[in-house]
Length: 120
Image (cartoon, rainbow, N blue to C red; front, side, top):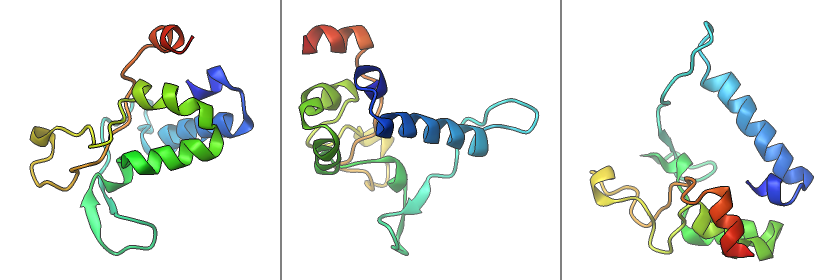
């Protein structure tokens, strides 16, 4: 999405890195795709503490800081398009151990058409 809107090299690199990850980690040798990967991961770089899904979730502030550094004007478009909420978007039933409270899982909440229409 970001690369379609603004063809910065960084956005292209993100796409390539993601596709390389899928090919390297999520593709079966016979050509199929795995549906999941163990989600226990370090809470932060260098941390020995691990939590379920820690690598795959973001706080509102983390995303805001990163997007602001790359393209501040994109905040108003990016945050709602991928479902980012200040209090997090992980519903309690999806977090039985309470480890993901206040965090966000990025997902495409709006179509490209909706985003384009709302952002002008």
